[in-house]
Image (cartoon, rainbow over all chains, first blue to last red; front, side, top):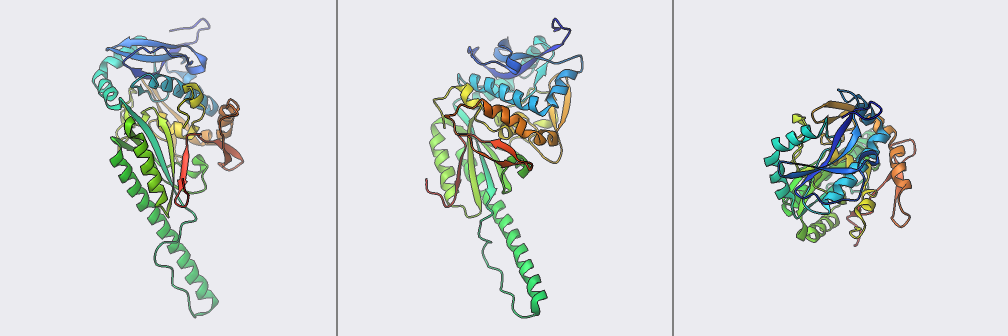
Length: 268
Length: 99
């Protein structure tokens, strides 16, 4: 599709649902959200400039962090609006087709997976739980032995060794505790996924993240899940927990994108 | 949790980093480049370093639009005084807190 100025436009997929619920929010760059019907499904899309055949314009924009950030929010806003009306399969960011027929073909191709995913996420919500190692955690069981005798040099070395092993113990305890938290929460959820822990420079947190989990929870068990998170948090000497959500089920749906490597390790 | 807020309002409350975790299937990994899948087109690689470097710009935009009624906590992030907005629905507990 070519615009008046010679720009080539693509079809940016936000989400797939069964019903064409009217939604009031705008899509990418403020473009109107439209519905494309195929394979008995409704795809919510907006038009975005893609550029020439290799999507050069879109590529360039995606490399601009402020554009990417804005697009992520715009995309999310549409996904949330669709999710508010019923089960939804959110598309990964920048799932873009040349035209409607390309999208329709993809929906046909993935019809079975999409239908199964819509069934799986119906009446369920994604929650995120992150755990950070507590810097103020006690140094772990078995306090370091006090250095005795041997002069100041040896005393320093002993103290240094004790500090290092205390830190190792704390890391280990945090990792073990995080694994236990994930295990407990996974039992409260119908599905669980692990995202890579965010680097401190990204999370903005002073403490290292040791768990970045996503949990698909039955809506009627939301309170149980929250209570479980709170209870787990109270029992932790080594961890600080943070709950985020509710999220559309981003972490529990198949990708429509033609990137076979991107999906294999998503669900834990 | 602001369950009575409109979806549009809620959207601005999420932190960009948490959102990117979810909408970029490859995940957020500081050490490398992110691969963005563009269906039927190609793969685009962007440098997360660039993203991180200007996170304050991105989040600043989202933050300005935030209605005053919604709590926004700002805290130092990512070196050079960058700021990060966090979610109102983002609750945090440590072991010694009573809730």
